[in-house]
Amino acid sequence: MTLQQPVESNGSRSFGGLWLLALLVSCVAVMLSAYFQLFGPRGFVMFGIVGFLLGAAGWVVAQKLFLPANPRGLTDLWPGAGRLDKPTAWAANILGLIAGISIVTMLLSARLDGVTSGGFPVFAAREKYELENHGRKTIVSPARYLTIGASFVLGWHSLAVYFSVSAIRIFMFGGRGLETTANNKPSQMG
Image 1 (spheres, helix red, strand yellow):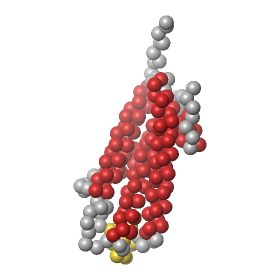
Image 2: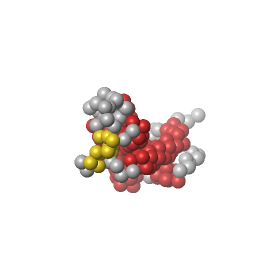
Image 3: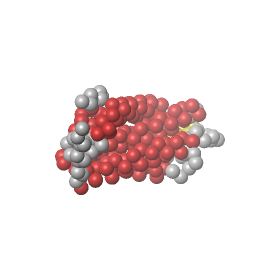
Image 4: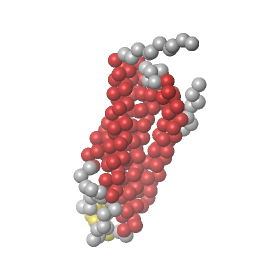
């Protein structure tokens, strides 16, 4: 029985590992932001904004800086991570689907009458349920207001987590992470 020699990491791989950690934190921050924007308390919008920017930046960094130097990703450093290929591919695909459905739902419900007026949390009781479009306010039913508000929050935050999960896949699986997410079918680990 021979022992496998440990794979040495270079600076680029350490860089990828740090980005992985940052992206995982960003996923948690964005999910917390979504909860707080739907149910309260107020004041946690910055979690979502920072998480979205971090996810988008992570996706660009993964593609432009990390992938050319590490086409196989970090899985040869962490061989057991290969088991996460299918679950993370499905998670990315489901997040993309949720984001798309939510944004379409919001647009169809709003019908150019504007966005929810009154801030967050979306499900807080209000005296009037109003949409606002460039200073013009339209009173709507609570159901329509909640549909527009909740679909906006869900779509925006799903898109933010999608960016992070897609970047995580590139850091972990290299080019395979990019291909399997784009093709909507997880690859077979061999």
